[in-house]
Amino acid sequence: MKRLLYKRRVMVVEDEYINRQILGNILASEYEVVYASNGQEAWDILQKEADDISLILLDLLMPVMDGFELIQKLQADPERKRIPVIVMTSEKEAEVKSIRLGAADFIAKPYDMPEVILARCERIIRMSEDASLIDSTEKDAITGLYTRDYFFEYIRQIENHRMEPTDALVFNIDHFHLVNEMYGRSAGDETLLRVAQTLKDVLGDHAVISCRTEADTFYVYCEHIDDYAPFVAELQEQLGGESDSSKIRLRAGIYQNADPEADAEARFDRAKIACDRIRGDYSTPVAYYNKDLHQKSIYHERLIKDIDAAIAHEDFKVFFQPKYDISGDTPKLRSAEALIRWMHPELGMISPGDFIPLFESNGLIQKVDNYVWKKAAAQIREWKEKFGFSVAVSVNVSRVDIFDPKLLEKLRGILDENRLNEDELMLEITESAYADNANTLTEVTENLRASGFKIEMDDFGSGYSSLNMITTIPIDVLKLDMKFIRNMEKDPKSMKLVELIIDIAKFLDVPVVAEGVETKSQLDTLKQMGCEIIQGYYFSKPVPAEEFEKFIVQEIARKGEETC
Ligand code: C2E
Ligand code: CA
Ligand code: CA
Image (cartoon, rainbow, N blue to C red; front, side, top):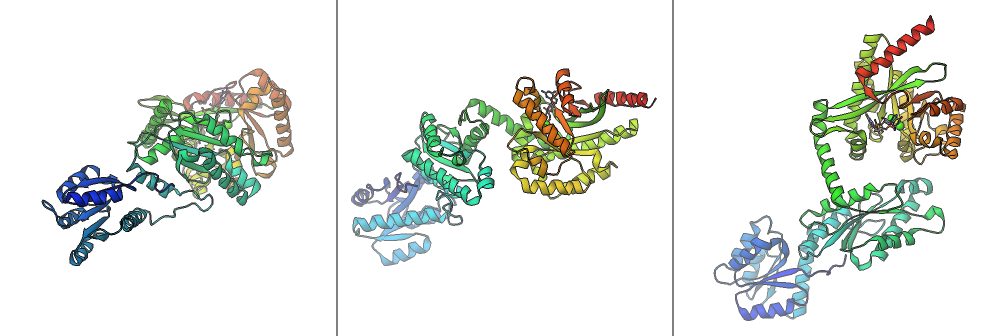
């Protein structure tokens, strides 16, 4: 931080005109000076702009309200108590008394050398500013940037003094965890340092202060710039190393002319919302917080606020989509996937695409998942009673659930309550969860499998995992990502990949589910390749439980014919 980037405001409270002038002249080189000619006048000014004053230089003997009284009033006021007071006096006794009352220091009259006065002022201001930060560490050990607490505290202090337009900038490194995983922690630390330095180099004096918040997220409080594109291009240029391995991609979220009324953290939250929006999209590494995003974040806040009521009123509905075994001549109903819908009483039906990623990002997804698991289990039980037929149902398990130490206990409880076996409630875990935290995930899935649960790896091929993942992670079913199916017929490479994955899975004796199958020709192609299980609009969209019953009835009839 440029410590004296802005001038602090100092208040001189002194009834004699000539003394005010002398002090004013000395202080004006370093500070903005505000004058009051007695305690009452000073108090009136402080009612309006207490935040703004870094120090009070106080004469003791004045008409209307003297210095002692003002100190006492300040001490009794929680907001103004923090403003340090230097008392100016020629009497030793008064000095002692004022220090007892709470003054920070004194300056003897007649006035000392100007340097001495300035040095005292500076020391006292610094002490009082630092006192509010004493509890936290100032600098991040890896990058030398400020830590989050200091960053926001300094912004608060800066903004007490100046209010030029500023922008909130948030930078995030794409797939930073991969740098750590592939090259080790120290390479990760080097990367962070390099990013911090490059940010400094490129943004130069525009950047007022910067900090590193979470692992790979950087905040920059920046003087307003109209167009960031050239800066971000330059950043990328400097960070793109010779070899691929050292290439770092940054995403930037920017909240321009940030609303100075909103508190600083809220402004950076908005920049972060913009930044999160571009996850994985390299073509436009900069996003601005704009009206649309503002609307969206208000909408998101609404959804977050409504989640508990939605669970209590059962506004979440669980739909079921059948999975068919196509290995024989006629398709057999094999199982179903439980997929949630939100029937909001005021907003209408909300698609999972609108709320699942949101709840995944803040952990609320656990509530939703738990709800779905319970409903799905109760449904399996109900169908068992009604049709004497067990339909296994897969439920989605999110990343956060995996880290819940009570996961197994919760699932067991649900099964017990509904008198079900472990293999009746199957668990879909998305592939990207594996890529993010391979070790924990492998451990958790091993435990679940040891307890009898069946694990399906969802969206396989969508992310960063490699083919050898399926050989190292213990799973029971592999679900091909929908995009392969969508591209298969147009793109020979996708076709080849699907074939290859099915072959490897066969070799490992793991059945493959093709998801998103919409047409007969897709189904035929997959069947030819040896894929046995199909889920998709070709058979049915996800439907409410009552509607799903027709598939059960059909299946019972089909079985009856089979045995005839
Ligand atoms: P997913 O788990 O990959 O679910 C498959 C999605 O593909 C579902 O979308 C399904 O309706 C859709 N789909 C199925 N067949 C076809 C097809 O032939 N063509 C097309 N175009 N789409 C098809 P949905 O229900 O909108 O769910 C989207 C995602 O939301 C799911 O993707 C899943 O990741 C998530 N989700 C849904 N319910 C839950 C839940 O209860 N918990 C969690 N954690 N996530 C859920
Ligand atoms: Ca799924
Ligand atoms: Ca899927």
